[in-house]
Image 1: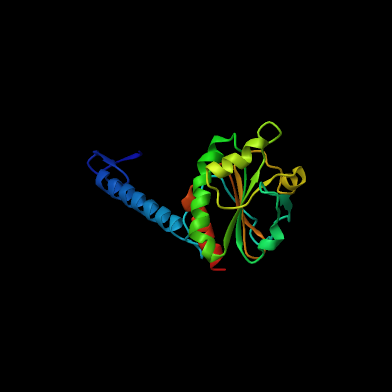
Image 2: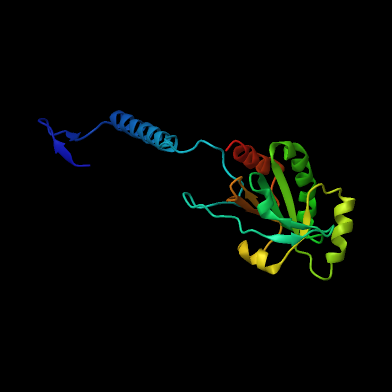
Length: 202
């Protein structure tokens, strides 16, 4: 701080007093807090929906991706064709009997099928069990009282859906046959239900 001699030779400090500097610092701090508050709360017209689960992978905005059709054999010997479900919201779940997270998620899918069947929602489970465990699928489905079609995977179908590198991998398909969302890993039932509720209204 520069100093200047007064008329009597006394040193007089130039500039602001300590009290004035304190007021300026306080005012600046309050102004910055207000600015951050305005920026963080300005949605600019964006959706106010809550956050998605960590593993939620939305389709690119403005890009419609058709769900690849498939016709796969079910555990009861029937053929299940995805195209037959057009007009419904469909959960397509890739899973396996040897996958603990898949097994934990099965009761949620059963519950969702019960709750939403009357609203036009279907669930299709695609087993990726290989030759070592494929024989266990029908018994597992019966023991778990699975109430939706369970089919056996075909590698071409897995590839068409981007390659299934981790299970469970779950796709939600809207009434027009578009992939609305997909999840990698076990998903809370509430997250799936929220997506169903949104798509049912469309």
